[in-house]
Image (cartoon, rainbow, N blue to C red):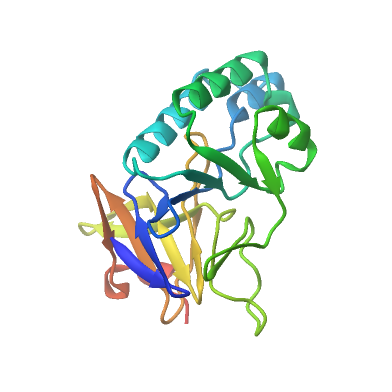
Length: 228
């Protein structure tokens, strides 16, 4: 699925990220690496291996865009300082060794603020939003609407849409949410809770389905998901 925003082509990838082919850049958001370890450190029974699953997802996304030269992480690469264990450090270094030609940059998210030194040790270029990229601005938190806010891409909200399936059941699926001129990405992290969204008039929803991304017409959304 390809859309146009801010004069740029954005290819929505079924693996949960966006490719900007004219810039050789992949955009992803909200990996929340180390979340499981942080939960276990706090005494919550969470299985091990969720960060490894997230990095496997990231590998699949990068492999879907082999010509890309840069990876932009739009915030919340990390979850909490207590989750940045030696195992996570080794896992990230192995991932980087498998993708040595891919420049990796981080737009600082709210969960990253106490972990900037870890990010730099991991070899990431850390930036503060908004970051210009062609006709777009890159954010972590979607900015409030206003005349000074240009077209852009963000994360942070972990958008999920509920779709009808039969009379009673509803599917709950991560989605890309184009609200006004900001495209909000789904969370890539395997242990990240999604947040149900209210879709306003003129806004668009795109859902990964197998190896495709499909646009969901507003008429197919349950009334609880439609605002206005």
